Image (cartoon, rainbow, N blue to C red; front, top):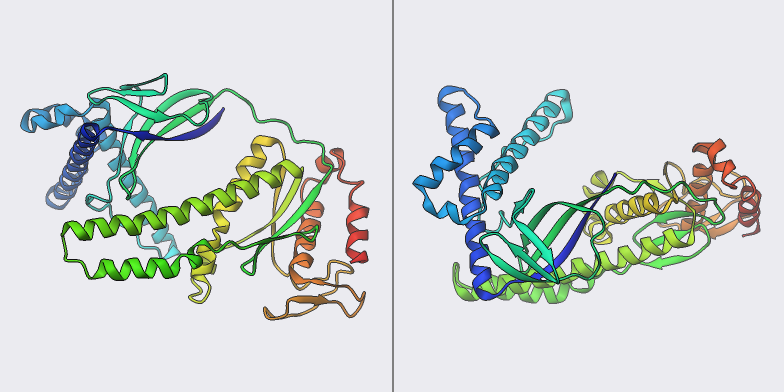
Length: 394
């Protein structure tokens, strides 16, 4: 069983946008009402209100607030389940905090206009046919189906972005089984960085696009104009959307780059080795946090994992400790600082770029530590001598 999410742009009319906004605001009101109810009950009586108690309460609320009848019933029920998930996550974080992880639990908060931006149809209430998406109590909306949906649709979520664009997200389940691992012919080790986004064990370097850095000057001008607008004015709302559009463009550029790069690697190689990074700890470095976030290593590695799994490619994660210090030719430790960009081994006289050296070490670690019997059966054993020769040759 494979689970996927398909995301499509929808184009509601002006009237339909008003209806969708009204449905969002009503679901947001219900979410905040249920949150306040749970909070007050616990503070006064010390009792907990369950999700099912609040779902049973919805028909009574419809009599008190007739506007709720405009929203599909299962969508209102999903709002109660969404709040329950928020409380479950809160209690889980409280337990982790007691174990000494020192994390703020983060009590569920009341949702403002920009913080509640989606509604969900969990089972029914929608129909997709001939590039039209029909909803109960909304009507038929135009949708851009840029690819076919494969599998059974389970849920549908309508999401509004900060730039007032609307998207339909279909959660799909397929009965397809994951393919067996491919016979290995081409192998590669990857070393991610900031000077160059990616360095392979083959010697190829992928430049870091730095989309945020390139747009910083334009972003600063727009934000400066935004800060001068009067609070709660129409001009301030317009300038907020301008800023959001630029951030959206940067995000789309980054995602497009990562998808193309990860797809190319999965198509060309049958075994991909990469390093295990503690990115949350690395972001705490105030000098590098913006550059690391702009590179988006975490999303790239996530895409690489799931694409490799669906294609039957070996994706192996290894510990990155000392991969830059160890010589890929002879295994000797050659100490170097971050400023030293060239690896020079005094023992085997190997001179290569430090990132290429690290990528080769990552590949060797992957080949030596993961399921040797299975990998050798796929034909990696015959490739090991060639990788050693390449390292010595360089």
